Image 1 (cartoon, rainbow, N blue to C red):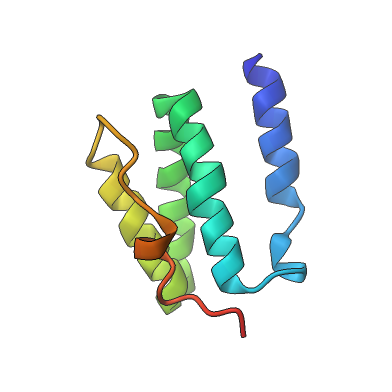
Image 2: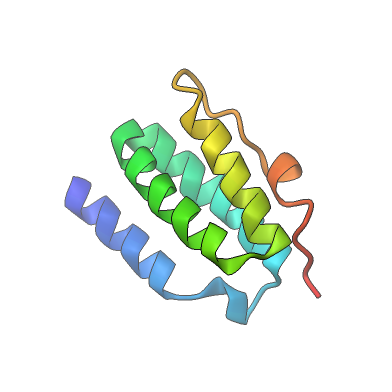
Length: 96
């Protein structure tokens, strides 16, 4: 069961949605879909994924990715519920 989920997730992450959507749409997808589903499925899996994303996003030095990294860090500090939302995490991302 875990293997199937991670294969689907890997395929999703390899196909770059940026080619069809803008940064804001990608951010919403990342926070509301990928992050939330990982959180619901496995807190340990979410933690590993988020730590890797934070590191990569910070290296980009872009307002959008910096804001996403900040939100992921906030989520890592809350073990009880999924507290981050696209409304709070994607404000610095535009579709232009």
